Length: 265
Image (cartoon, rainbow, N blue to C red; front, top):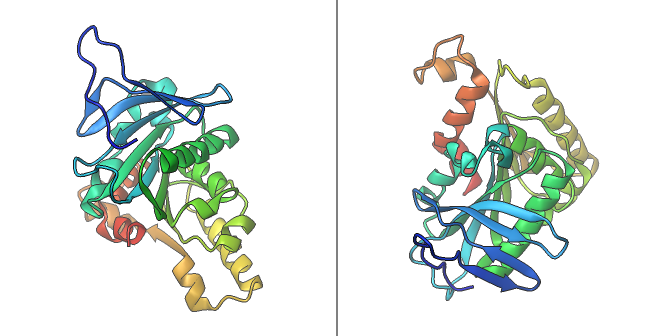
């Protein structure tokens, strides 16, 4: 698949493409450079809904990086088409890597099925576009963070780095540490939904698993980062002291150059 087709006009049929048993029905709506609701029917009969941005410079002749950004509960498919694009992670990504395809799936939940869907969508994008398999990035915010923790507990080798924000870790850590995929966890010290303790506990488990494999502390620091933001982080950026750190973090972390720069470094 060398490039995207144009949007369907009034009364026109949507562009339908087939590849290796998958059938893609391209969405007809756009939002800031994203085709909002692509629908991919899998050979097993599931339909994966996602938004996709392919840079204008893409022609298939050179492999591009790929970023898969999993939204939280408010971006799930039942919330409505395009609800996933309320989060800014997909929109800032090309500021860090211009030559990168960006996908934002609209999942059905934050559990095992959605984790399988993320893996399948990633694999399909790797086959459908000219993608540099060594530069595939993953993020999950809130409920999406739970999802990507399961993804990283099953198929971590698909991804170069992962960003886990305002969330908790539900996945297995052994597969992650065997693959040595770097993970950055960011959350507020007074996150009002999860609290920081689940992230702290996951960080400790991952570090312990690396130590059990004999990795040095310097190497562990490269592979897992825990960033618990103090209240001053939010107030210094214009939020009241009693604001929801969960909601504020979901916005601020996408615009934090240290956090996003780490992901795409």
